Image 1 (cartoon, rainbow, N blue to C red):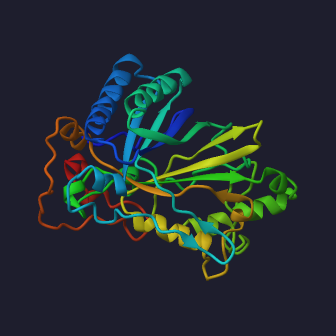
Image 2: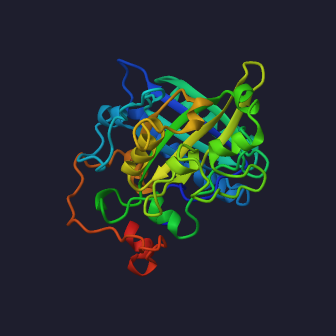
Length: 343
């Protein structure tokens, strides 16, 4: 991973806490933002030294409205915007406000808890916590519905290409678009389906996670509609969550992407359908309760923000084309500049 990037490329650990905070109205928040930027840097440095083998880290994303309220640099990242709802004939992807998002992860719950506690102490005087999800790894990377989640994730060097902004937006190279949705599942209805019908919903076998052949897979299966081609990938760091007392079982969908347009294409396929009306059947059992786009800046951006040294306007470097994957779907590594592309 490029040294200047936040930790968006690691494979997630066994536990995570996802936090969304919104700044309170009519309050000065600039100092708190500086402090939280400094804290995120400190937490990551401390975790790397104290617990190097636990995969502990904290990634912070900033919402569109907060970006403007904090007078952060312009022009903004090219595809940074307020997420617009995607409204299909039967289901819709909601748009909800979020000012700051924290993706806290690690194999030890205690470490995740302490990082969340430290963040809350800084933000409580000026902001409100609007979402707190405690995610966990379920068996061999499965969702609560019992199917393996994230099979289409890019691996190895492809993760940087699809997960991080490169030369196509040089001012924000090394950053990432972060999109999140909290899904709640109707387990009773889904588990009432026979196994072969469950597998049709996903387009995969449940036990061994093998994708159905194209001539067998239903056109409204999740794998048929959420996969928009080998040239368009995202990094999914989804984890399941569950609360027995409230019967709220779900998946926290979290995607890091080099371009938000890829996520929008996926959502359009799922909610509106491809063709229109052929929506993702998984939505009959999974309801999104939130939907927010954030931007994850680099560590140098956070350091400058913490020191009060961010320029209000970003320089306008010469545009450059981002290397594309080869036609066979593999990443054209020869055209990449490795870490230098993101510096």
